Length: 466
Ligand code: FAD
Ligand code: AMP
Image (spheres, rainbow, N blue to C red):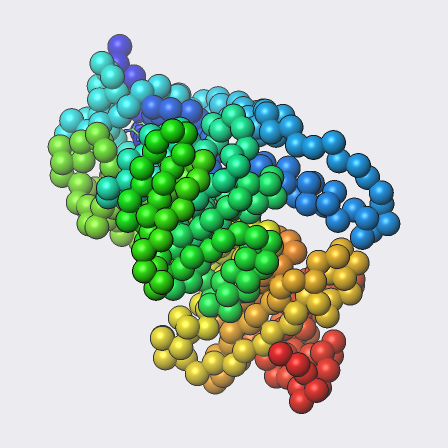
């Protein structure tokens, strides 16, 4: 007999499996369809493997400066296959964990590629399922650039680079966005000669310009060659080498590298979903949804990367919760006001709310407070003096519009900052909050004080340098 489900979820990435579990928590009979591995991009090819690699290079980075801490160590070298094996083990363990979670909620996992036959039927391989409610969570895939042939071995996407068997001697990264720069930092620490080519005038074009400028300076000081306002014109692979012709303000230039990573962005994964058979409307290559995450077809929802940027796992999960609740008869809506963004470069960058340019573009008159980690006792003890906290506030109401952090543990610190933005705090409220001492979080309180030029850990404004 054909099985009937209240909710069919397509895609078992963070958005899809969160949605499936929420629907099951609300009493639904739920099935999740997955053509690849449980956990999706995030767990198998994204957040988790990259952060595992970053954890390994952090250890190496620490060892390099051990002597500064009075510790004498002798590093025997890097075992890249062990680093990759550790990463794979973590991924496998978490993937199994997702399976256990789904099973515990009685969610059926259907293996295979799903495609719509009509608004009320889905095909998976040779089986057809009736749709009561459906949540599309098919994620995103690397976006190629015209004229560049990705062979997966030499000219790679972020998926392919996670399969590398050896540390390349040189690596060209096309795209100075989040993914490109995380890999740039990983391979720089591992000893690869890294070059980044970014089409726009600065790396991380979406971030506050002061933070992206500081990151560029730091990465360049570590030896990463960064070319901005530059575009790759041609890439040819011959005799185990890739010859790249790129164009920048200085005209045409050539570089020869062992490997290349194309990290020029991602696009929603709509292929072979048969959306046209269900009449689901797409715009600009993404599925269009309303604030309930519902598509134009009643009872069919879409969430995560497939509905567009920002491509973040926690945004996918938040949308998954909303879609699942609505599919189960509740009335939930998505709130995009506060989505923290984390970049796991060395140093890290994290931000929430509006940056300086965005706030001005929206017509705010703003005040800015900044506090450098160089003036933080805790940062000093950690040997981490690079970076700062920057707060953008509305001059009229004192409300915090955005908080931007570059420096040690920025991706953890942003959580307190995000709460302040979510609760619509003023800088005066934030600067009265008791930040424990000695912690890096004190820098947030001091930056809030600095909005009114009252930071007690900074010299009087007129005596400051830089
Ligand atoms: P996905 O995780 O992409 O899952 C979609 C699933 O759907 C896949 O398993 C796919 O196989 C399946 N699928 C697709 N089509 C079908 C079909 N027709 N039938 C059945 N199954 C189908 N985000 C962060 O928040 N933090 C990070 O640190 C971070 N790091 C990243 C690093 C890299 C290298 C990359 C590539 C991404 C990173 N991301 C990060 C982004 C994050 O991975 C995505 O935003 C997130 O995975 C989106 O979740 P999702 O559920 O929408 O889709
Ligand atoms: P993200 O959007 O964070 O994935 O980053 C992708 C980055 O690649 C952005 O900074 C883009 O400006 C950059 N980019 C896109 N196309 C090209 C290209 N052809 N050459 C160099 N950089 C590019």
